[in-house]
Length: 496
Ligand SMILES: Nc1nc2c(ncn2[C@@H]2O[C@H](COP(=O)(O)OP(=O)(O)O)[C@@H](O)[C@H]2O)c(=O)[nH]1
Ligand SMILES: [Mg+2]
Image (cartoon, rainbow, N blue to C red; front, side):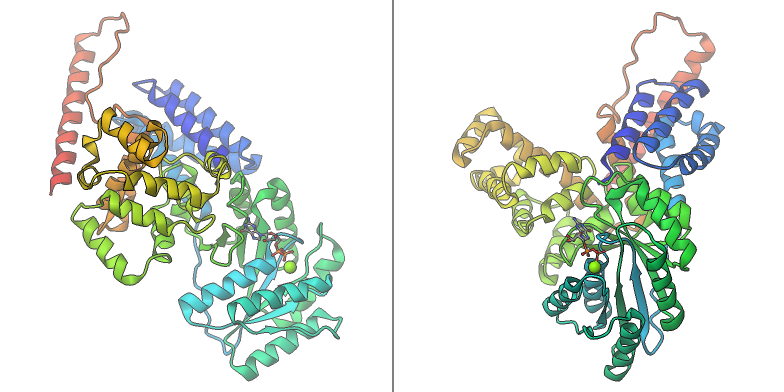
């Protein structure tokens, strides 16, 4: 997700990192790259401008320029700004009425009907509420059937009336039925058009006026870029929206639209649609999204996905193992097997920091189906001896050859698997039992390690051919000392 924005920002930070000491002028260069990557990712000019305004001010502040690692500080400035721009959240549906009405609106094909189903599933799972779905899209006869199919698969009732041609009436009838059957929530699946038109808007306004939904959510297709932004503006003008759902963020959505839609409507983003399955609805969190955009991964979303996957007992066992710092290749293998569900693997990998981005993963996965890939990984681990599984460090080229031959793969694939395991292990074990703040810190540390593998080791400075003045030397020595102290502290913290 959000590949281009992610790639662009990473490039910007990387080029700054290579510069050693930052000055105002090379920081400005880095900021230019940040700006370009925003624009390339489809963030509108207005949003980019205001975003860059506050980032520049902070980045050129003394605190950042004098920091030991200014590019890391810039990552933090951009992260904070993204979080600010994407927030605040409003994840409370305030279902305190006898019947709470949620209306979905948006262009045709944006994912309204699918989102109705996903939201119904989420309510069932998390709030133990069985909502009533209302088929208020009377434009296409198939739309009613589509909702019925969804409802049947979820065990959720669907109200429809094929005799009625007025969507307002259908909505009113649904609300009445919900009252009678004590459905706490009604979700209205309204009609969409290919482009915004007056008739559609009037129809929605009438529903809004006469049915008085408690929530009006705009469903926006994340793949449509700036068009999404335009339509969001029009919908917001006609209806008082109080939430946005952005769908199809599992594809090659460029991410910019999310920032722009938020900016244009000022309405909280509530949910993200990340796939065609009914489980693929995430509650929006600005911090998680900012991390993802910056390529730091979203550990909270990852944990959530994993949680929906393994049963409670296994989870407890995992947690205990993780807290003890044990996450063996056997655990890794069991985990992989659980992820053999189609599509899930790509998604989880996309949430992990340091993993190849979605495009690469999709390419990789589409060459063979996911379950085949997983079978291969499992095969590799199965070809290892118990000792190797416990301590993959002992796997030398000879052992690697043997394992590869046993699993029928290339030696390179064995190394890749171990690398993946090595990336996951410190993250998972380190994060078990941490609070959210520490986790954030950990994520940032991890990220900087990934961008600069030499970090953590004293840097060997390349000769510039220029001699340093005594004052500069003294300053460098001081910086080195500070860095060493910091390293020792980090080491100590890791031990305790
Ligand atoms: N990949 C992906 N496809 C989605 C998502 N949400 C909806 N879709 C697909 O988009 C198409 C249109 O969805 P639908 O709910 O019928 O849109 P509506 O016309 O707004 O009701 C369908 O093929 C859905 O499966 C999503 O989050 N990810
Ligand atoms: Mg529909």
